[in-house]
Image (cartoon, rainbow, N blue to C red; front, side):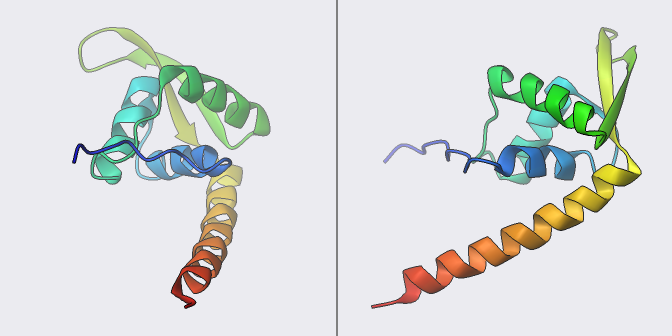
Length: 110
């Protein structure tokens, strides 16, 4: 049976982006690659979803960006978490843990 990409639950993309930026600044393509890497290639974020989300999160003040040069010597916008972004990541993680536990309980019923 072919491996299918998991569909992102609505609202989880922001959390995944924040998590991917929690260790180091990354350019947009790098954010997508990091999410894919952390998920064991199960999650792929299309550019049409990723870049609007990065813009939205930056408008929230959770990340900030600056222009730099990528590893292949291309001009790229690099994103990094702000202090508010780190706080939001903690909130998102707590909410996700509660949701996952509730879904697990439902799935364990006979």
